[in-house]
Image (tube, rainbow, N blue to C red; front, side, top):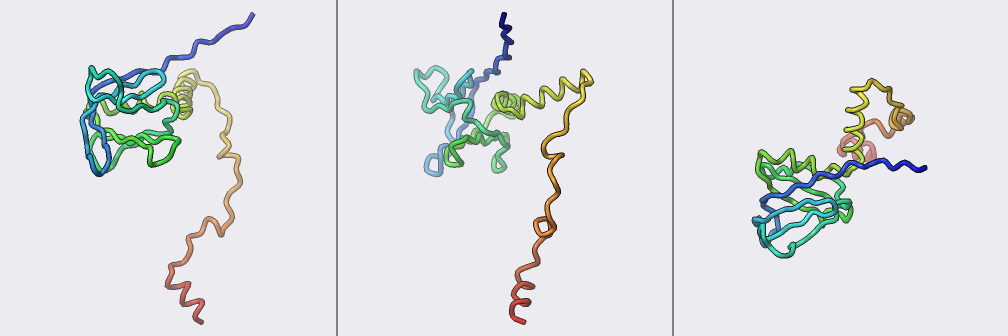
Length: 154
């Protein structure tokens, strides 16, 4: 008899935001809705169809956008040109970030490690711990350009 393990559902989130539309259009108000499989951007709460959508599993990372307060840059596996930049209310920033990265393996491993630390289980060493150190020519900082030029001139 096969046992099926229930997978935890991904968190949903929705709310008003401001989205960066590009250099020509600047920042525009929108309504974001994150459901189980998509992140949708609507013109307003009761708009019939989204302006654009992003498959949730295409999201590869969520980072703080350094040029504007309470803004996030959502990177996708399609490259930098397809990333989304959104601004959300300050009090909801952490919650949006948590919901947007919930499907990523790193977020799930953090949840697992928190659960493991509470139960006291021992983790196996990671692959990074097992790698050999880099050779010296890869670790050392190269000399400044001026010194290289002087060496070649003599």
